[in-house]
Amino acid sequence: MSDTALLIIDIQVGVVEGEMRAARLDLVFDNLNLAIVKARQRGMPVIFVQHEEDELPHGSAAWQLHPRLARQDGDQIVYKRYGDSFCETNLAQLLSAHGASKLWIGGAATDFCVDSTLRNAVSRGYQVTVIGDGHTTVSAFALSGEQVIDHFNAAWGATSATPQPLRVKPAAEL
Image (cartoon, rainbow, N blue to C red; front, side, top):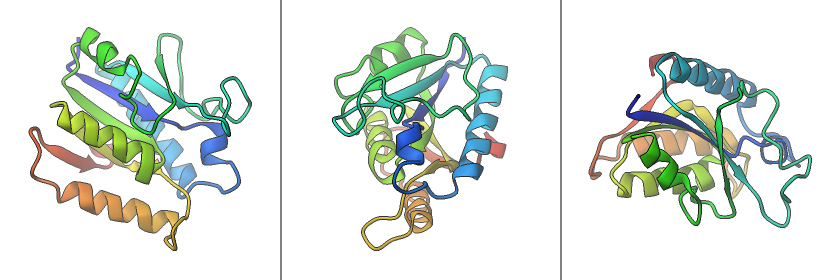
C-alpha cells in the first residue's frame, strides 16, 4: 500500500469546457493522464472529485467527469458542494483508509477548488505535491488563465511555512 494518493479535482465537462475553455487544457489532460499512469504503477489510489451546485447539477452532462481522463473501474469518486474537497465529504476518511499521508493534486479550478483543497490538506498535515502542469482555470478578474496558473505555481512553490513540504512539480517528475 502506498502512502500517497492522487487527487484530481473537478475535471468535469462543464467546468473545463463550459462557457470558456480552460487554459492549457490539452496539456493538462496529457499531464493528468501521465500522473494517473504513474500513480497506478506505484499502487497509489486514484481519487476523482466531482463538484455540484445549482449551475452544475448532479447527473447533468456538464457535471460528468471529462471523458479524456484515463479512468478505470476501482477509481474512487468524492462528491462535493464546496470549493474545499474536504468540506462535508468523505475525503479525509477515504485517505485515512488508504493510509495516505502524501497527496499529488491536480485539477480545476486552480484559483478556487484546487487552491482551497491543497491549503486544507497542508493544514491537516498532508505532504502535498501540486502537479504544476496538471491544473487549470479560466480567465477572470483581468488575468488570463495562463497568468493565474503561473502565479499560483510560483506562490505555492515559494511557500515554506507549512507543517509538511508543499512542492510543485511537472507530471514528468512525479
